[in-house]
Image 1 (cartoon, one colour):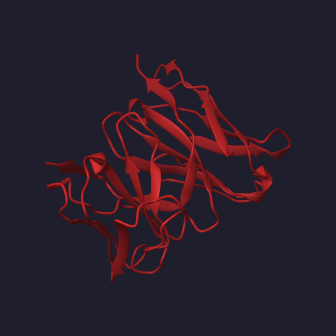
Image 2 (cartoon, chains in turn purple, orange):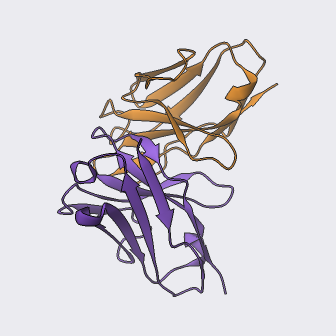
Length: 118
Length: 109
């Protein structure tokens, strides 16, 4: 059974930094592109970033480009999101999601909540 | 990376059919047959309902169907049931990453 478990969400002040993690199990992690998707309270889904199976390609939404860095450690079956220069508008539930290979997500984690507030 | 356009809300009575539209551009919906649809109940993670425009994952009811015409994709739910009440999001490959719609709240009257 595929499992994705996010962690690392906390309350942080504007301008601060945070690293989210996603522990994957139940599938061959290094076969798949992985994504981060976020959802602000009461709002819709917003794609944040993706990383290819080998970490060789990364892409970001314009809203986080230059501030967030996605990475992975295939030896630990883990996905990460380093978040710097955080803004109040980054407050959201952050999901990691497994790409099936055709740009859709059949498996999601339960999310980890990041709150940016002074 | 502009969000796809969905109606904010739709409603229908049990047993009826409803359709949710998802309008993009020639850079996303119009260029690829890679639209997916997700159902999200309050406090839950999104659930995949349709992928590649019209395909259903195993376990998803055949009351759910998807289609596309030009830059607009659609999700149709037939035989509405109370448990279908949820938020629905479309998503399309956009050349670099994906883009989601703003979401549609389905109310079953």
